[in-house]
Length: 365
Image (cartoon, rainbow, N blue to C red; front, side, top):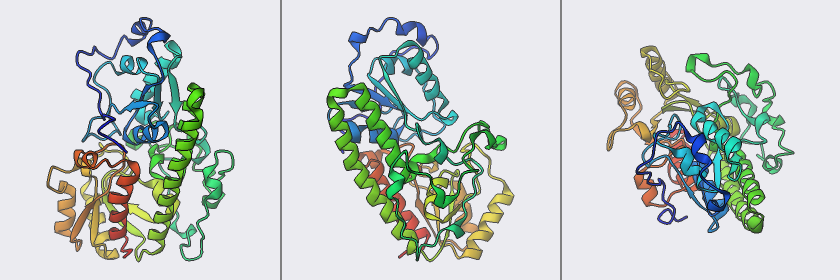
């Protein structure tokens, strides 16, 4: 990938306040818009959009380097910027409410922009905020981990995980974490199998909007799906080789889809909300777990870490438990400058950051 060609953040000098965009859209004619540019709501969607579109479309990521996309909101007139482009890729979930608002405005007042919801077709595969992973369902010694059917929107029933009750949006309640009762956990992009479905959705949306280049989008998506399939296999092999089935993550609970896919447990004292305060009892419980399970490496969110230092929670865990090391684990909603300098997209960050972190934490040497 070429991050030098595709800037992560478009300069928006002189923008006006976000409100009042609907009236401004009338000033833009369809002649001003071509499908040679677009926006994606955060880092991972941006990377996938770039992978699928290739040289045909240049996508922008409005979330700045060093910022996490989860909980982010635009400060300027981003709707107008997106209306001047040809496509907007987002996730239709309240956790990205700013993107929902922009998508609704575009669909209502400016239908020349292709609005693509990456979650389209995945309703019955989304996990509730209170979903509990049953690691007993996974037998990594005997399970052949065949996901052939998982890569089809129509055929992926996920019966092997028995999630029928967990995927009912109307029953998912997590008021204590300030999540909309009707919402599911949005971190679906962290599952390399469901990621393939989102990539397909992006390719289909771009092909519908730009039929002349449909073959290019479909071919690029197929090639990238192969890379995600390889990533899936590497996770399967890693967890199958693991001596431990529990890791500790000193960050908000973003990895339920990974746990559910591969059958291991991630314990966090923080919970699902990045804004949630950490209680002393949760810290004490985590310290006890580290010592009881013989956990040597604690994982942490690099977006929460002061430069060159561990986050305070990690320091507390290392000082108060038998753990001796800590490693970064990224939720992939943003990117850091060092990763951008290395041209690391979603796949590279998974391979260079997350896989090594899980290998160490799960003792899968």
